[in-house]
Image (cartoon, rainbow, N blue to C red; front, top):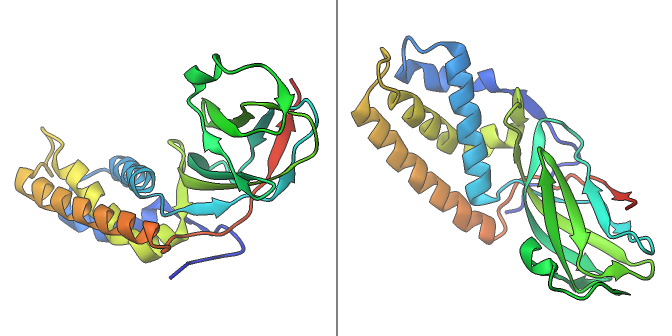
Length: 219
């Protein structure tokens, strides 16, 4: 089953409170929010369930870098999944290996990415010599400074995030909600739920479908 939406709908992190707080009574809300956010980020990074197809764009001659612009500052690109150039799938290249590739113009055959803070840049390993169509598929996750997350994470995968958040909080020593046995129980549940989500994402059950834009960076 493929979940698709035309717009990214965000919900406040505090929507998870009613499912987390009963297990960690006495936990301050800011601490709970941080644990929930950390759990959501880890879940997205491990499973790649929040997949998005970016708007098709076209390369410009002699422009090698393209910045990924997301529609919300609450989101970051966790991983580039595929890059297709004129319907041909490109190979990913490690950035450190790119220095050994010949510096030439032509039709790109590979790509790599660079990240500065939350910004991600897509760079082709060959400088485009013409106008080529490009389609990128990416996995997203919340940013470290997010105050809200994608609503589908709550609706479809809330159990995994709740379990991991409780595990994180219950494992905090010198707190009134420290509970090692609960932390182990919830960590095991989270691990199983993440495993299930990762398998289902590989079989096509993913969240999202919103198209986002890239803009060329002239170097």
